[in-house]
Picture 1: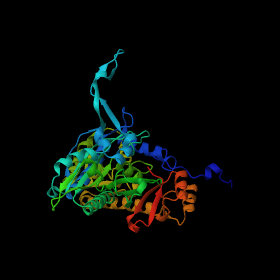
Picture 2: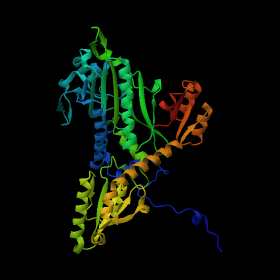
Picture 3: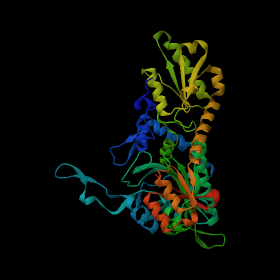
Picture 4: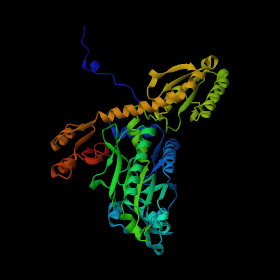
Length: 494
């Protein structure tokens, strides 16, 4: 008998919808998942993106869930100007130092044609006082707070705005790091340091709930080290989530600003003793970066995998039409099912396009729709349907009575949500590596280790640790609340 040659012995490569795969080239895989799911694309504006309808529907669901939680915390939505006077930004020295290199500045208020007929800033239209396109809004919201707060009776004042910001990034990546991005930024003012600290922690807890319960993303909640704090903050709190390449994503931040910004913005109030004092403020934010995190947590080599709670659609219904004679009754059954599912609060679409059935199936797979439902002539006659879970694939293909499906569909979606979280949590937990020495940090990453390293926080600030972190492009991600900051999480990050 002839022995198989090396090529025959090699395991046959499985065909995937996304190439290269995660293991072959994670950054390119990430970009191709976004393209295949039709979520976003680069725009003509350098470093900015166009969020397409499917990607924006995902953001809207994230936004809706978070907005409800924010309002439950007695925070009011408002809106503040896009343009911030340069003088405002300059008031807080540490703050401006942190953002100066990323600021886009408006210097003219009119265009004119030059000798070549091209539009250029008009020579006579230069602004005496330039404006900065907001990189964040502490200063301009602080200006309004200084007018709205006069007495302790005006406190607490809790404000949030949903908006866009601009930070002039040189190296951009869709959703993760773009010059312009969408976010919410909350800014709260209190009469005491204790209230401000409690608020900063509370808002981080809201973010943690959003990530765990809605985006099915586990993470580590903790405090940023002094070097990683938000410029001008007393303390910064974060939720660090592990991506499938083992890198950390700072999923959100919440800042206890003490009286620093209150002093620079002159936010004072008369207390119960009739004395004037500065308020204590917090700020907190979450951006479209959360979508990048969701992609890198759940997507696979066939495309997106959407957690049902934030998925643009819970299900897509595919009419399986083989001839014109049965087309009418199949579409009628699909429409009836769609209305039944929508009546119980589910987001459902019918793909009645004239594309081939396999193309429709792969489209729903690449977009990560949690449930795919197929209805053909046989299903209509039998009062059944066939459904497939995106997280489990073809192994989950099930045919059942329509009434049975309607009784179970919410439980199926809940199980998908739970299983996605469990899978991501197991991935993270298995890749948090506790080490006992600085040398072991270097050894782990030298050997190509994937994941986080947990080290005694007493080593922070040492020259030896700083040298190793610089060598392997590592940063201290946070001091976990879980062990009261006794350890520090170190990782490569986005």
